[in-house]
Image 1 (cartoon, one colour):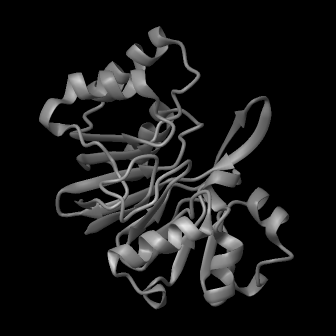
Image 2 (image 1 turned 45 degrees about the vertical axis):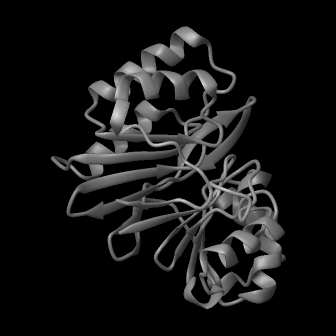
Image 3 (image 1 turned 180 degrees about the vertical axis):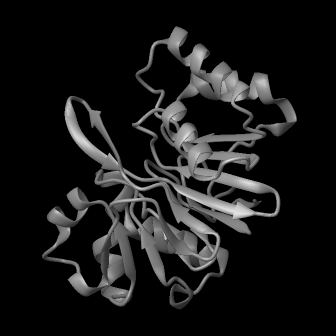
Amino acid sequence: MKLKILFDKERIDDRFESGWGLSYLLEDTLFDTGEKFDYLLKNIQAFGVSLDTIKKLVISHNHWNHRTGLTELLKLRNDLKIYGCSDFFQEFKDRINSSNFIEITNFSQISKDIYTTGPFKTLYKASPILEQSLIVRTKEGISIICACAHMSLIELINRAKFLFANQKINFLIGGFHFIDTDNRLIEYIVKEVKNMGIENIAPSHCSGYEATRLFKGLYGKNFIEIKAGMVLEL
């Protein structure tokens, strides 16, 4: 299965926009919309993807840089099925056709071989939030795709291992939220992730310089630098 990096903080060239937040495409399933719809639309067009091929949208959590493009996207595609946590729907309920909104409360299947972890209850700057991640199953094993991992990478990986027992974890991709984390804790978690059997690592968005540097040193050729415009084979 191919993962198209529609939007992230880096880009492969100037055909694509980059910025804060992320947006990834897995076949007909879009994961987040990034910080600005104009950026997302430009990058979709640069990929040669038709908006009509996108049938489902998963919003990881209710932070602006992961769902700002939603309102404009719905003007063009008001039939999209939207999968979000309950705190997301409360803010957007006046803009979303409730019949198109699926509230995620547990581990669920989104599309063939694409699953949501279900919501994690966690805190961000002392405020409660809900966040979900994706798990993709392929012949190579499972891949975990997260937006910010506010719940912590360790907790996220443990849930994936519980949900898909005895499955190899081929990729861990996305924002790892280490920007404001103490370097000693970052070093500990990076080593733990490696010890948990993650084969390929691809930090992006909010992962931070130090964590990215440590993962690159530890993983070598199994480290992937995520940039808008890339396509990964999971």
